[in-house]
Image 1 (cartoon, rainbow, N blue to C red):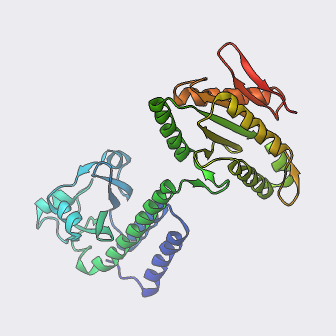
Image 2 (cartoon, rainbow, N blue to C red; image 1 turned 60 degrees about the horizontal axis):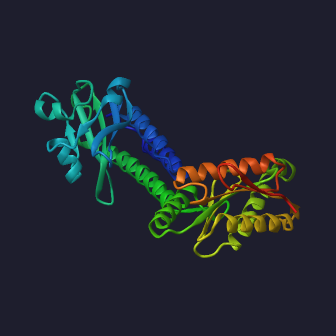
Image 3 (tube, rainbow, N blue to C red; image 1 turned 90 degrees about the vertical axis):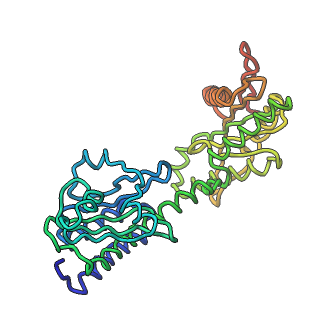
Length: 345
């Protein structure tokens, strides 16, 4: 390798660590790792090869010196050979002369023939997530003396990937939308699935209410982004305060909250929706004492529909009718032939 000054190596690692500390996305870190390795080792090819946890196949996440076609089509099984040993035992591979061991060279080689090569495992918590690969056209240009610094780059790649996966897992596990403190739509939909299964099994009823803040865009333009966010959070708090333990609330859209009213008929849900509408109308929000109103669409099982898709479509259409009829309204479809409209007081 070309010997670098101590300061140069520190600068390279510092650049990567700055990005690693400021992002939960591993792609930018991978790009920097590959870029710095190419600068240091003047290598022909460099690649971050990752195990897909869903398929357990290897794929290239980031690379240099590889064709787009090769990168896109690269898909290898977790072999029992040298790469398999690397992945299972975290044992690095150093090939100083590709002609000395043609079998090992063939197993390791990516797209192009090389003279020397390094492979270092990407490991976190004793789990190998993939490996870092670099090769050089000349023999002995990559050797055991280069392995220490090369492994440090592999460790940075491992930390970035692990941080990204932990972040995604936390997002999946965190069921609360923290702008409103109600459930995210995904968990709410799971709750809705549970309720319809229970309703079908035990002959129960339930209803949905979809609430939209009237003139929210105008309020945001008038009072600013932060105040409009606080308004939405306080509105959601009003809705939540009127729920029972068996009910639910979810973030449906940017300024839309969806409520689940368990053990409720259509008429009962309309009454509750109208009570919510009146409560909002008579409440001031935020330190600026903002007044606003909501439009509400209502649908119920089994009066309006017997599937989740149909229930959601019905409640969206009902909300549209409430808005179309002048806002600050509650609307539901009483039957296929007749709709029930609750005007504002």
